[in-house]
Length: 598
Image (cartoon, rainbow, N blue to C red; front, side):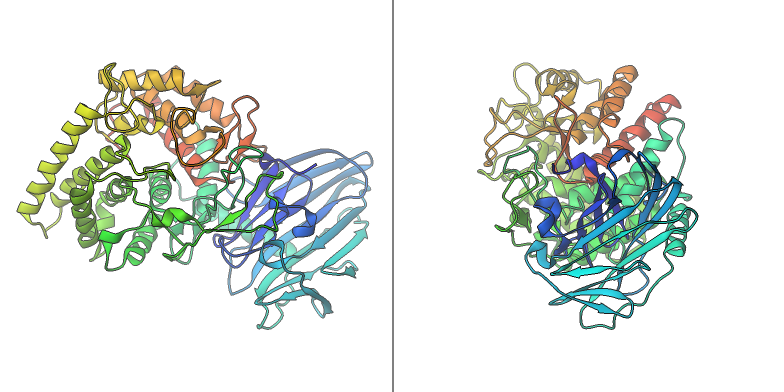
């Protein structure tokens, strides 16, 4: 039976990633970047689309997995009837153009014969490589890609695959190193597997040691911060939304998207979470990434870019892959790069409102000022909204609120910098007030509830952000009415859906799960409203659907708690950090926090 989405652990070298199932199979591996074609794509198909299995020969009785604290070094204790074996795995932080996936097997007690099978299929499972022995072990080559497997055990070769059985001795670990490298470069040399594990652990521990600690939920915050760092593309400073593509939002459904790119919205949320925990270097790197991505045309800002700022993310389907648990189609690329989403102006300027992000770069304010001007000119236009609907453009209330945020934060920045046009700031102030008035006149129904679009009737969980961005205080009657309506009408077993698909035509067929970030927004608002016990209950409910190693995807099935959508999802982990920090501040008596994010 295929591994469920919540059966996977995540490894990253902060440039590329792998997903390892609880059955010991690496079913997803991209190199040299997060968005590169996968060498193992069984996650979206079957073992014939590429995977690397490492498991006991005898039936497995129990598996216990955990990350070493503050790291993405994974330890799995696998028990059989005859003994216990520990499998340790990591992706070492890169030192050159090779990408390493390290696995080590060590018998803890008894006797545990092991087997391994590696089926390499380049280009998302479509290309069978040439396999040959080399001095370092076995090499797989196809087109621009090569994989070299180094290990002391003897390997049997087959078409595009290797296999072996071995009987590790207690106290004598058996190591494996799978190295991706360009096929036209020299074959990568062997490495000391034990040393690579120790070095990876030290690197992550050094990074984690820089963080701020919190009075409550500190371990939960820390674990999500490590995931966010793992989704950061270190060479550029971009932050990808997730490590995978096309994991379904409903099993058997067609809501399957490629999230291995950097959405400005997701990245600014992640950035705020990292900043809340004291990681200022990531903030500066993201600012520099933004300035390069936007380049000389901030009025043509996109909502999503490639990890290095690439603009063209042409969406296409891969018909040879059936999809995770037959949930097709499998897509790569993302059409959202062509959409207009007004809210990104607010999210970017909210991030740039941090003083050092503007003062630390000579071009930051000129770009921020142009983004504010674009928001001023365009806020009356319909757009595709935060949920990237694929139907008609609409006047989304959330989009107008975030245009207000863009101008509000630009005015705040202008009060601190030298290069200011007073007439321009006056125009921003006028338009900001116009947006506020129009949203309150047309974005609120007769019951005092914020609605999805101006003059509409549908609810939308994105309106939980109204108090979180400072548009209205949390105790405003309209905010309280909206929060109550969302909690009752969009909540399913305590998890919040984005909107009701039966009520809203989003241009995509099928249903979807409950949205974990929206659920966490509800917890944050309840905390601001002084309903701390309720906020804690909601927060714990979300933490309860994390998988065994603490990962969250985008959504969950409210009936079963099964994770749905791409994994791990930056959006969800930013929500854990933001809500955990908010609750910690509430416990510390800091109840009047300024708006933190868009």
